[in-house]
Image 1 (cartoon, rainbow, N blue to C red):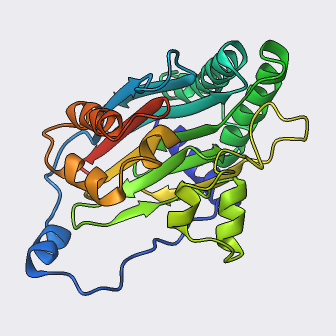
Image 2: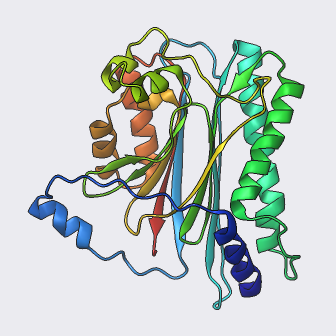
Length: 302
């Protein structure tokens, strides 16, 4: 097992780009400093605590979102390795096409990552991987693109997935679903870039982020699975927070509930499952204009 993992991480460094963490420059309060400097509770083996939530929303009579969540631990006393696959897909193109596109994409990516990575983790004599983790995630998304074109012609979907292994997470992303790191000191760090028209306008300083939330073109995507153009996913690898969370969500959450409220709900909830469902409740309480999907992963014993 350890030989396989060592080789896997060795290949990973060949292709990865570890993204820099954007931190607030505002001085932290005394209470925040206590949280930041606290040591994580030792836990052996390392593991993830994950939860999810989903709703049609208050103004939709059907669900075009799909999510997949899997978390496991492989431990033999010598090489203890938590592993997870987390996927959010937000379909578009009407009831039939949007639902088919998101469901196909989530399932194809999950199946690909399980066969290429998880199956090797539980194989007593695994063959070496022929791709890095980043290459594997990118290949999974390209397979999802083929599936959407085949099974949901005329439809499309966003796709944001996270492959976690040990203390690293590799993110694959197309569209405007999002991935965040949530820190206990109050920081909420978005680690994906929306592939949307309004994001492009923000980048060009034509509108503000606040104006983008109500812009008439806020739902126009520049990249999505199902488009005729070749898919170009963003792939990046990060160290997971020593104390904190990974959150994946559709725009039915991030477009409705402010980041400060998201952080408050997570901080005040006893576990990720309860937090996820409270986040869904908050989005519905704010009008629930779209389908809502969220996955929340707490990193334990890092």
